[in-house]
Length: 185
Image (cartoon, rainbow, N blue to C red):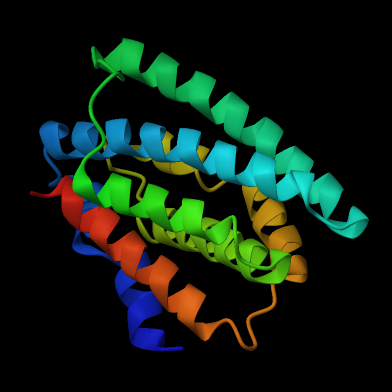
């Protein structure tokens, strides 16, 4: 798997702009609303994955589902604070990601859980890259880089099977890049 693609997905110009404080509120809010839609889609995917998971994976996936439910509540609170309507239509990058998650439902558990690990690992690494004491979005970045989230990503990493799943890793990374790109259009 290309280290360059991992770097592009986790050190994207959108994240640099969040860190540097040059991102516009409109671009951040567009991304935030689309991410809330994605998180709802991810919850659906992860709940279905939990339903077919081997016993050794159930605790991690169940905790992840509970965290996604709490994340959706948090998104609603952020929307209220920022005066956003979270009932926006999904944009093409969000719809493409939804399609990938739907397709992963038919993949073997090992492939699907590896994809989930990539999604969450990119998120953690990306927001860690965006960390800055001076960013006006510091509270958001801190929310997405907690030690508990890091522990969850590590637990998913123990379930992931990267050998033989290069194609799905690449697909997830490409979707991540497209999702960051979408915010700046």
